[in-house]
Image 1 (tube, rainbow, N blue to C red):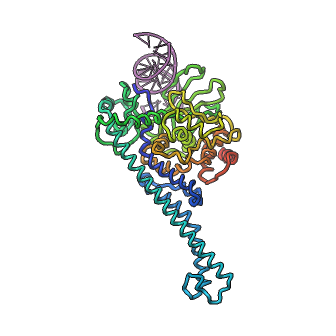
Image 2: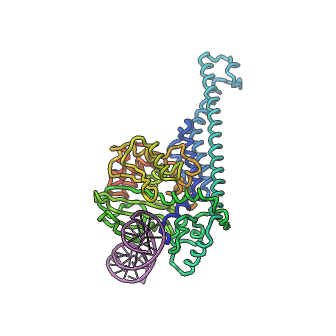
Image 3: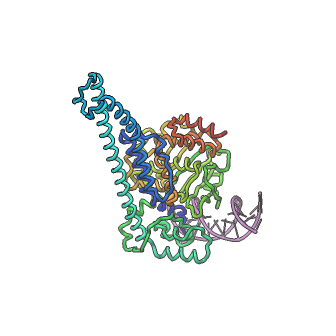
Length: 463
DNA sequence: CGCATTTGACCGGCGC
DNA sequence: GCGCCGGTCAAATGCG
């Protein structure tokens, strides 16, 4: 039996990986290079249809450039007017040639203006270069993704294919579209499964073609990465009297078990917002403090998320990306975490002893108690190697439909403001939905406020 | 009647 | 090999 459950889901997201990364790159470029820092927050919130994500990405990037250009253009116009006024009918732009009654002060001003103009032109050229670089990076990643997907499809197991075929023919009632299942990747756990093949929640990968198991042996590293990503979990601790936090998604309970060492039962839920969504979560009260609800998320949504869910996804995504960025092993993740978090904290921890890499977000304390939280959750801008796309993708949707909405937020997902706002809202308000809504509102409004300010939004959202 | 939840059974992984 | 445990399934049950 394939108990990996949501495992295969992670691979789905790989489809979105380069897209996500591209967006991240844009953000990284924006952060890393001062020129792009002029981009107003709102430019990250462009939205559009998923199919033209690339176009949308370009649009976003273009918008970024445009937003940067805008003030410059305005200046240029102003400068042009001033220049015309000063130059009169000489028609020359060379101030040194002007000698038609202009005062020395005017000439100096004209020289300064022209220098400014030249500087801005140069700056624009740099921006074009950056845009070009980002675009090239995206294309390279897209190519890389195509290669990986081809490898995966080559590694596909005919036996598993046959089992899935049987399940479908038997009328197993699985609602997962056939094409999703067929594209399920092979991994150490699922490949050994002998039952319940319908549990292979394979995200909708596109472009998988052909079978060539002979190439599987050269794919070990990739498989290891996928296995880690697939099993990566995010555990959220939050105080709530409700039996389950409302995180914006729709869940259906499919099981409940008594876990060892905890008198409180553990409930198992799966996302029902879309047929075949592989995301699952476990809800259990803390044995030590029963007012604390521990919610563990696993897998990737294959559908667009509502704003409230986006806030949560943003938080967990950032946590996971921190865990996995630059590495796919939990041990490395721990090292990375230690490097990133020289100051240990109990608010965001990474477990290497757990069966799967698990990021635990302790939201039972206000962020003010530990201001490091927001930064702990943020992946370093330099941690965007080829692994990163899958990392981000492991939390966010895998369907092309998801790309736009989610990519729209992708720039925010890695921002500390996003995490801060969402975290503050979650922490301060037992009403999770209202809190998350407030958090998202604060994000969308481009409100780069500190955690405390995000809490104000929370209060507003309650009403 | 349809859908969601409950709950016992089942399965695979893992440690001894 | 055996037993424990986590995770999931699916029939039974409850509810609107």
